[in-house]
Figure 1 (spheres, rainbow, N blue to C red):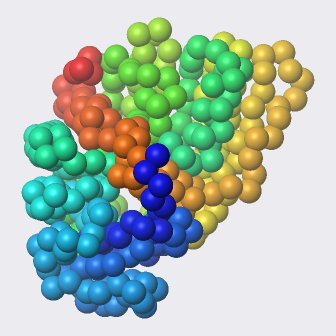
Figure 2: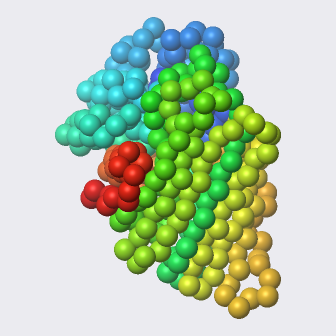
Figure 3: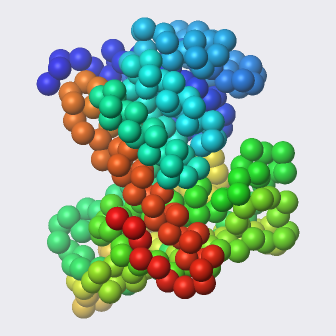
Length: 345
């Protein structure tokens, strides 16, 4: 152990938008990490963060920020196309980095970041934080206690209401729903059950949306054990109903419930999680009052802190992020081919 505490870590922020203000900043405050430098091209967003972090100073550019010798790591919360350049600059400047998911818009750029961090011996953590969301965290505990058994079947059904403004940066992304949302489920299922071997997919674009990318995906992931999990992930403007149901069935029991994240996004809203053992007359409540946002963000932020202070290898590192991007690539390839394909390893 280093003897240092989180309070001694100095953080630089590149990107001061919604996710930073609603999810990252509360966790930094909770853990006691110090925000020291801030940059966003929109000065209004920078000022919003500076008001909450009076010890921080604004930087005139991300290049100035990443070269600040006081900083222990840089938290990058910007679109993936821009993140590639900033992450590489931070790594070249010798800074550890916390990146948003997806790490990059595609595998090629993701591999560049991971290789640069490896060669520079820099800690790279990617914000795949759903692993710490209540539903997945409680599911992992059931699996760890050997109450679940081998995965048999799963169903994830996400129907989310909302309109993406045409001037929002995400509206121009050529890959949208799977790359930015379903990837949460993909990472969490890999975390719980290991690597799937085959994927079958339908990707669709709803003409009601003035966006470039997909607004609906239907994914079937199959594991070597022949277990299958179906993922239906869709955003709609047609009605206000939100359905976020999950069922994970094992040989010894099932975990089921719903995710509350989109009920009042970006404000906290709790998950509901149940477990029922095979043969049990009634399910057991595991959770009704714990929220994904902002609490799950403590996972990746703690991991980069622990890596810097004590050399603890992060679980949501660059290699894990690349594996998620490989599955996402397979998703889009399967839809284009109109058939199931193996996932490259």
